Amino acid sequence: MAHIAEVLAGKNNKVFTMDRHATVFEALEMMVANNLGSVLVTEDGALCGIFTERDYLRRIALEGRTSRETHLENVMVSRLICVDPSSSVEDCLAIMTQKRIRHLPVMEEGKLAGIVSIGDLVKFISAAQEIEIRYLNDYIAGKYPA
Image (cartoon, rainbow, N blue to C red; front, top):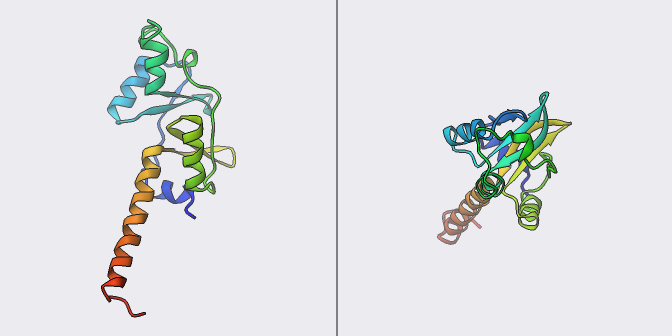
């Protein structure tokens, strides 16, 4: 069973964060510049929330707020679901599906170790299955002794 630590090892370990007092516009600029679907929100360096594309649509666009005047602390999700590096990929996919979320912060010993998206997990599983299929095809074709 694969663990989140393996997914993180195959990713760029840069985690993008913004202070809770930053504006939504600043967060959007960072998200667009780095092709991100979310940004983690901090207060005094500690994780306190997450802001996603979906939050923008629901809490800014549909409520008629302006991104230049609204601060992240007013629209972020503060009830975070976090996992640790030893969490299984399958368990994380189940959490994401049940909770209808697309990003999971990864915490190790109380510190932010990274973030995984549902896309990261699907990509990881697909790559592992591709390797297994290739091995099985080679075995059937007789490339490996029995």
